[in-house]
Length: 237
Image 1 (cartoon, helix red, strand yellow):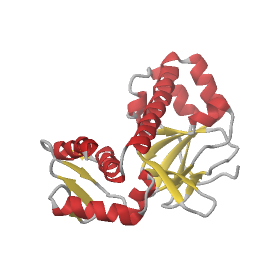
Image 2 (image 1 turned 30 degrees about the vertical axis):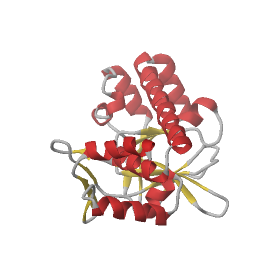
Image 3 (image 1 turned 90 degrees about the horizontal axis):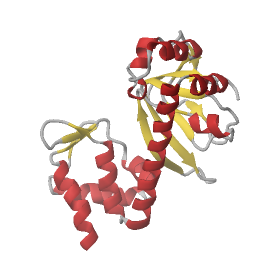
Image 4 (image 1 turned 45 degrees about the vertical axis):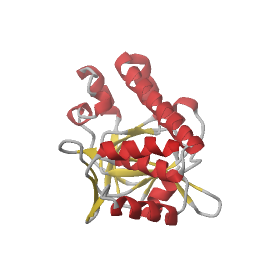
């Protein structure tokens, strides 16, 4: 695969230690991981990984936001999730040696560290703490996908949208939360497997009932509990 992104300086062990995934790694493992990584910068909209790429390196998002997508034959985008700083990706192909299962694109300017596949495998073999961190990451993929299959199989669009809003929300004071920046209606539609018009109708309903409040590029949720209650109430509709 052609090298993408602009190459930058190395990643420090202190930067890696701030990753939630690597908070419990010892100094020796962090030093080995840092020495093996190179850092690249990607501009907004730039492709980091392409679907079906035959590359097997592992990546760590140092800063910025990434969008994980798939595209249909006619160009329709299906959004899986958005990743913020501190995340790892690419490990599935590194483990099974198969082509990339998704595309990963920079939503904003990003700094990304690259770990060659062989060094990734060496670290798993030589450092049990790193192996456990990777295992937890893979387990989180299974849980997320199980949740999505359940939602797509059992929930109406309005329930799926409300559940997605809660996934995107960051807690603030009390029961309130905020999504910043809030995805467009088209982006939300791609995440929950529907069309933009359905999302627009439901968002208008939530807004008219005071359940969401648009504030510039962000979306405030005055009561997370009320949104959760709506998801549960929908089962009885």
